[in-house]
Length: 313
Image (cartoon, rainbow, N blue to C red; front, side):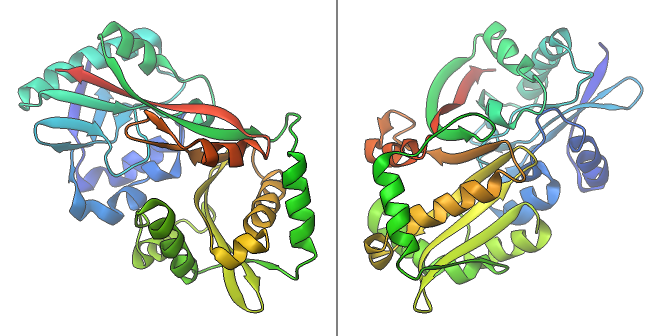
């Protein structure tokens, strides 16, 4: 296949977003309106691949730092975005020419963050084979936990008990249009339990909610008018992903988070096929937070991996 590689420019925004809609591994996070909310933090180096008819055949979200190409440090994951016209031999050719292109740009290494299989609308693992052929090294594997909503799954006895207890405690569940209203609880829990800050600040999460109102949703669980648990979900046609889950000390007493998760799972059955809790790892995947993943598995979720590869250019 004859094709060219070009670096993404602002003038390519419409074409990028239009091609994205037809990709086998579409996710709204790859829309330029999402990617560019934090453009000041990263040196964007996203790439567009076109055939000799000037038609886009693939996209690769990316940034560069210290002579390394990442796909993409500002996104949870992000490999090649391709449509159904892309075949394995095409991807092998694309990967080969990508290495030459990046070498000419003085890039020494590629860090490739694969798109997890649950986000594939149609088989889209041509890139995994190309990674193998190009002798990429699997250097990190995170483990998430997901429920296939159309298949049989069950809660643990303790989880059923917690939910029934919460239902009797006067907790009020509500979807909110301003996610930042829940940020006090989310900040408190992340700081106390994980010594971390939310990936997004209040301004960013409200901005993204306004840009993607059907893909980003926020929920609170209140007791006597006070937020005791909260959730923010990132949603596609296939997957509802819990981007943030938080519950303060009072909420834990009342089993508020279990009640909220049960509500989200049941709501997701109407619009999606998969409910994804997110990863339970630290230290580049080598440390498993056993308590955290056990909590997710008690709802019937099971393991899905997020793989990271390294290639010397």
